Image (tube, rainbow, N blue to C red; front, side, top):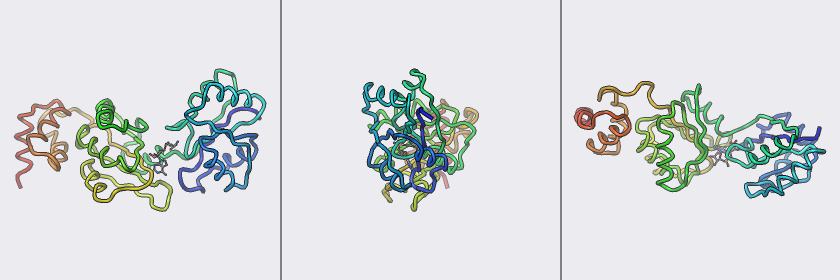
Length: 273
Ligand code: SAM
């Protein structure tokens, strides 16, 4: 049938493509894709050959109009390089324009790194917020984390390997005491999911620079706001891993609103053997 078919593709392991995705790719008239070489490799792996139309973040209104016009009479598949299109990938504007144009649209569910990481992390899944990539520069990254600090949900972020250590350090600073999972190379040979405090993970990855693709999952903030300094022990202990008691107290005071002097006294007590 003519229309736009949004098709999720594997995030590493080619065995993860769904039967319906293969059937749809086999039956379609054309594939709109982020990168024709990447999509070409997938089709080749499936023994298929289809016209490939580049449709990436730089697509113009005219490019979108061409895909939409084609989808009135042909079956056009939209794929990204990996995973679910539109999820930190191109496609949102195309889908919006196709909807406005009255084109039939359907979405074939399949792999996405965000959901795969969330299911693996062992952190609460009842509520989560996917925040895509954080800004690359230090200030923007910290501001973005600050804006997410009080969201009562697990946070799911995409990150690039060269930035991981700095991002973990920023998480330790802005969201002290929150458990973090680093899910790396999901569905691939060197898949790993490492959990711990952001500070401990930052130290690990500083010593073992990571490679590959990464998703971060951060635990939600504590259920109830801290009322007494001892309620903040977990935060203080995490902060004390890298900071002096006075700095740890200041940081936890900022995060919880508790009295800094009381936290300082508590930090000194916690530090005693
Ligand atoms: N649309 C894709 C999806 O549904 O997951 C995400 C595309 S986004 C441009 C690419 C980012 O997703 C990577 O930088 C990484 O953060 C994450 N990612 C993709 N594949 C991954 C994998 N196999 N393991 C861990 N993270 C992955």
